[in-house]
Length: 111
Image (cartoon, rainbow, N blue to C red):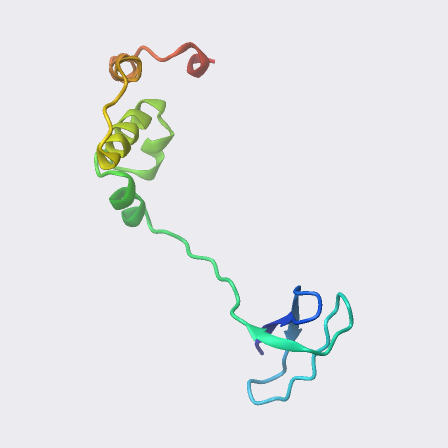
C-alpha cells in the first residue's frame, strides 16, 4: 500500500495520497487549495550512514563513531578540510589543535 506524493500546479505544494494497491487509479486533489491539476512528485527518502561510511568520509583515525564526540578529534577534521581546500591552517588554529592533542582544551570546551 504505497503513499504517493503529488505537486499541485496551482499552489505548488505537495499532497500525499494513500493508495490501496499499485494498480489502483488515483483521483487526487490538493489538500491545500483543492486544485485538481496535480503531477506526480519524486518522494524524499532517508539515508542512514553506516559507521564505516562515516569513518571513511570524516577520517579513519578515530576507531569508533563515539570518538567523534571528543573535541580533540575536531582538529583532524579541520586539518583535512583546510588541506582539501588548498588553504593554510591559521597559526592560532594550529596552536589550539596542538594544545587539544596534549589535553589542554580551550576554555569554552572545558565546561
